[in-house]
Image (cartoon, rainbow over all chains, first blue to last red; front, side):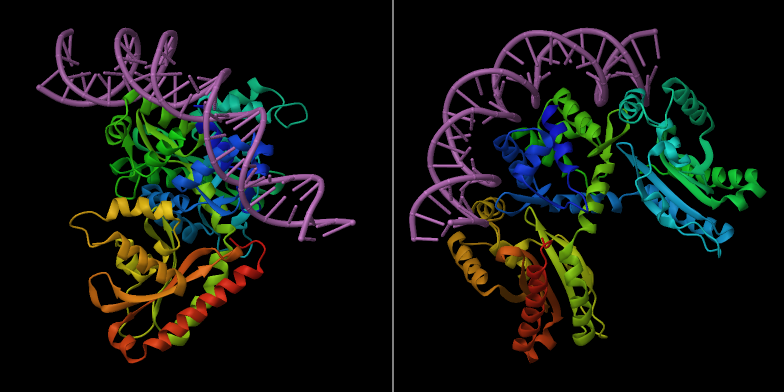
Length: 248
Length: 248
DNA sequence: CGACTTTTTCCGGCATTACCGGAAAGTGCA
DNA sequence: TGCACTTTCCGGTAATGCCGGAAAAAGTCG
């Protein structure tokens, strides 16, 4: 559906740093005619996904907020995960994240910062790390369909990128998918280890990822204990989701 | 753009109380074929506006969160309004709302509950009141384009509805548009008065509404004072937005 | 203030795509 | 295992999106 793909492309041009666009900026970005682009954005404004600010200038519209509220109010995932995350931080003092992925980027749904004097900042997964540079991201990648993974590789596996061999990478992901768990240094921070496990929804489908980010010095002392803690927590969240007929 | 209109229709079927739909539910609701509906929802899932949960079952997708975050992070409106609302609650103790409208429904962006022993609950504008039953809603209606207002009237002005005469109603809105201010009882609550004024954005376009909801007994003692307070607060917000080149 | 440039908006024709029928595949239940 | 129902798939056709070109609008400059 080409029109819907264009809808996605247009909407993704709006960001916190570029919240407003004109018709001609959008048409240049998308390689479309100005009149065609105008038809599109006008229609998006009519349904509420965009809002016309001035003549020819648009921002994200109220339907975004409406849908987000609907989504948030119904999120059994966050509801199930929150108390488990709170308890985990209290017991272990380390920083936690609950994440989804959206078109190859991490999306943080909930973050609880650790309580110890030396702790990993909870914003570490907000910066635009490539998915394959975090254990949480690799868990997400391992849950992608083959087609979605190929699309992602088309974008990220090229000369000069850190993924050298596609087949090696796919094999790595297959192992991770089997384990449902992975631990690795966070991006280029050798002092920080990310320990991540998949949260499964109804019908055992990977849904979200719960991860703990820990100073390497503490992780090195008892890596299996950390693995156990994270796997157990995600099993609890998955279990609550599985028991809940509304669970997503 | 019929396809985009269908996108809007589909997305609006997802709510907090109905967060998940099957393909055949959606096709029945929209009066479309199941295969046509499948094409649509599959495409929406590919761009991230929906997410496929199970075979043939969909929920709102991660792009909603991504866009909402982008929107929230850039909202000069809320940023401008928040300290002014905080000061107003502190000084006067009454409940405040900052609202947008989305296709004829109020959308609360920020709500500060009053501090006095007898106070109006901050949730009062969350319940699905028709726009014309609140002063805030009437301010919003008065800012609609003629076409958008006609669409809204087509939905709301019919035999048995509370709007008896379209032309009388339009005249009332024209006066409200001129004043940029209105006060009236809240819905069917004779004890609560809603006092609302328009917030203007760049190029003097009505953008949002700031309103105060007050026990009628307190309002009756000094109605002009309340009017002055609300009008001054919205003028301050409008002024800050006008001075801000990023203002929406 | 007029000329000029650029952008936006509008609209109808045509090329492209959305839509759907019908069939295959999948799922649940008795 | 058969049946009922839903989902998914796919190709043909009718409907729609896309765009060119012109009109309108807005801003800039001399």
